[in-house]
View 1: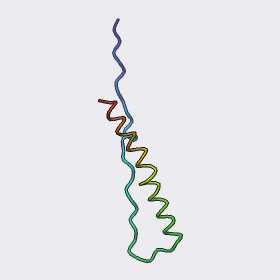
View 2: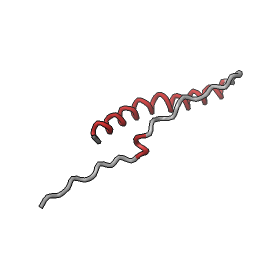
View 3: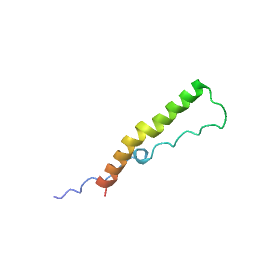
Length: 64
């Protein structure tokens, strides 16, 4: 009796790229606002992109 292998499934949310960079307003930015924008940008662009991009490439290679 032959059993079919399970279908390959990857949740779509895993395959979504990270958010883009923060838009910086064209005006004087107080230190607290600049810090907040920098933290958002760092989260989106730094930590997320490195790990997520590698995971997406790996999943695409394995799901072929």
